[in-house]
Length: 94
Picture 1: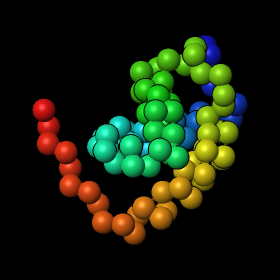
Picture 2: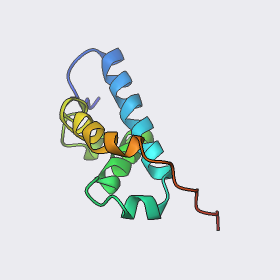
Picture 3: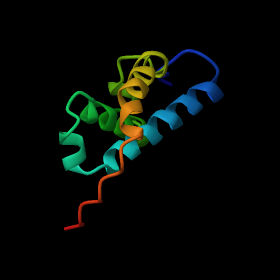
Picture 4: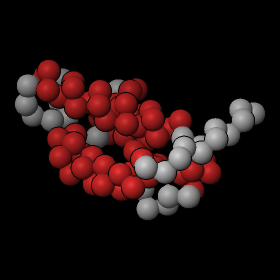
């Protein structure tokens, strides 16, 4: 069995779930909104969600703990100024 991160299974599953939720939220943002904030690594966030959600653990090289401890706090800092801005209207579905 391949493990992505050392540590208790329950903690690892919680980290996976939270990172997956962040990726799912990023996936649902409009392309216009994401293009307006190119400093945020949207593709990488969504890609990480896909890896977790679809079980592509064999292709994971970095520990999710690093993502949780380094990348998520960085993302929070990047998103904090956007939270006070009004939300854009959703783009119509094709």
